[in-house]
Image (cartoon, helix red, strand yellow):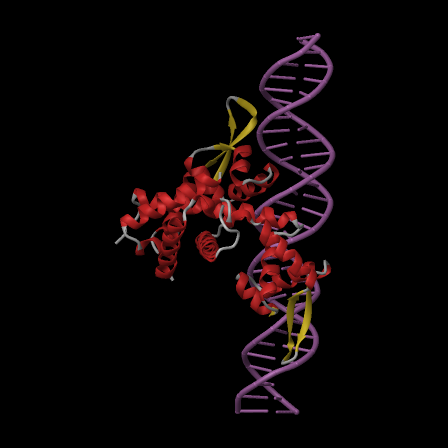
Length: 142
Length: 142
DNA sequence: CTCCTTTGCTTGACAACATGAAATATCGAG
DNA sequence: CTCGATATTTCATGTTGTCAAGCAAAGGAG
């Protein structure tokens, strides 16, 4: 169907690569502002939505559970996250953001400029078109 | 200008986050297929375009030069890359892809499905629109 | 209930990536 | 030539990632 390497596709892929690079930079930068690494920021953001077993964090991050242990350890040692027992299953430990963790996460979201800066140049209609194209792109490839 | 957290912007940012995650997954996966890490694949791809001083690789990767030393070491020990003296400046070492390195890089490009899969669902017109929106998004924020 | 497998988490060993500081060699200006 | 700047490497250290092994708890088969 799609010619393997037509100029248009290559251009779009290059642009996406640029978006990816830029997104990462900004994310790491915003995390560093709060003395967090990217991985720690991601986990903290996840836990502000709801407490979660370690195992589920690993699934979200697509990494081994043993890795999550260390990341949560570091967040816990800074008082941003705590481990609670799961009342329904004593094997499970629920990681949850502390109130201090939620404050940090909120500040982090604010300093994440990616939402405003690059999207600011697009009108509401254009953003709608972009949204729909991205949706189709992601939905179709799944 | 842009309301800080309107639903549409949040949705687009979420979609971009998904694209970023997906891009990374596929890139790491493709690299792993050739027993390379993501960082190694990136450097190898860079050096297939043209030989380059270590320092410039570090700039492209946005990391410290001392880090590049290790990555190039590993690529060199596998015969994918070599260090050459720079005729104009004896302090500089030019890293260059070997012919074997170029073969590996070419295979890697081919196995990188991101170009075909998700873009396949979009018509040429839609890809043009997407390209222009991404361009404006990136250009405006720069 | 006991046995046995599975599941959830942690620990330990190890590799890659990343930073920062210090060492070495070279360049280039004065 | 001397001195400061530049390019690279080395070392110490920390974070992220994997895999294998271990332990506690859950859950089913008998």
